[in-house]
Length: 381
Image 1 (tube, rainbow, N blue to C red):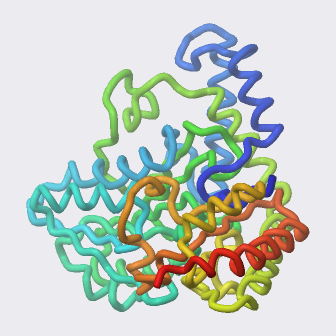
Image 2: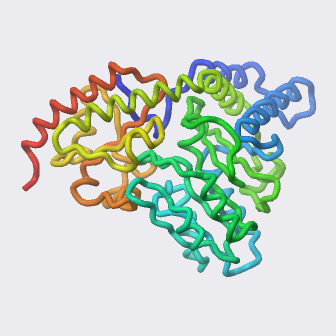
């Protein structure tokens, strides 16, 4: 099997699986309980919180555990919107956001909120000047994803943050970092809110986190027992947190090597594929985008047909976001950068992890080359 759909989910690492099993079967106690074994579990939860927060340049008290990226995005946006006193507050996002962000802003717009959707350029970048022009004195929140999940563009968060602050320093800046965390160098981020999801970096599904700086006023998400300092109530997922901590530690230990390796694999695959006839790159240049995402259009072949033909050969890719894979019709994210019609229909996303190999890139390209010669014979006229 050659697995090239790591933006959808990743294989849980051995260390993360072992940590999850340990905290499910041995130290399975509820960290909110008062007896000594439960207190020990709470210490582990807080240790992971401190490590993740430090990797983002934040304090432990500024990091909240959630069920994943979607919940983190929802809390960041809706929790901020719910405390706004100005009924005409403005919210700014982009046309290329993941549904976990885009659909939340659509819901706000349906309530009558002033929502602005910025259009990226053909490489998937947001112009800081265009963002500054959209920010006004009533702008409450800006949300721009760090790394696009379909074509891998990377935003200059520092430039965008500066553009926002120059127009309205009271505006909060959120970034969906689900495809950025662990795929770009760790370090402080010039944002107020940042969403991450464990299953995108070899932790189990169902665990994530939200960075929320101290200055942010936010009503939080679900109500209940007041866990996560009232921002996200619900029994603490200690096994998931421990597993995410283990996955993070593995990533951190091999950070430079992992990023170099994925970048080399991506460029190798890009060189193979773009040497084939009628193959086009979507989004930024291969060397400029994120190290793990490559999106190409194979003209004359529907992406779904090529996907299933590769599946028969044990190669797994996608035609876009897993959250939208069963929806028919126009690809909103590709359309935001001008990729439409036949080019959009023939688009395939390849997303890598440090577990992939050069041999897999060569075999994938070879299989695609052979398939194109066959599938294009049945091209619709």
